[in-house]
Image 1 (cartoon, one colour):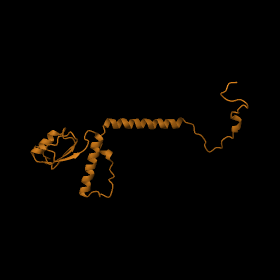
Image 2 (image 1 turned 60 degrees about the horizontal axis):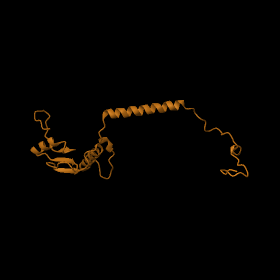
Image 3 (image 1 turned 120 degrees about the vertical axis):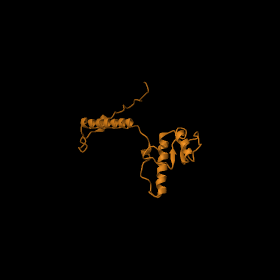
Image 4 (image 1 turned 180 degrees about the vertical axis):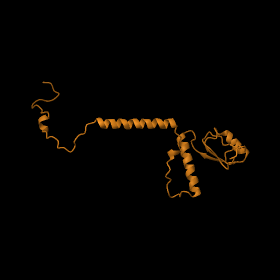
Length: 155
């Protein structure tokens, strides 16, 4: 991450890594140039050259997204951009990685469901619920027991 040949070269002041085991190369390079490092560390993560270890589960995409959300919210609170008394209106699921193909597939499924619903509503007949129901005598259709006979007992 340190390439002095580029015209837009800027030395980073802080490095934040999600997994110290996977990001071992930038961690060792930051140690060479004394750049402070914050790492989301699991129980099995190496803590060598990590200045501040934030304990969390760094194996799940949802827990990583939640930790980035918490870190971003806390930085904004420390800067004074959002007050601590006001809840942050940014949803945590915006920090979760979703594959673009998965998003497109979900949109197609939702579109197909909507089209099915539209077709079903076109094919169903409309019922007039405000009309008076036909009067029917329930006593005529009810089963009448035979007197003197016990059900389930053979004579």
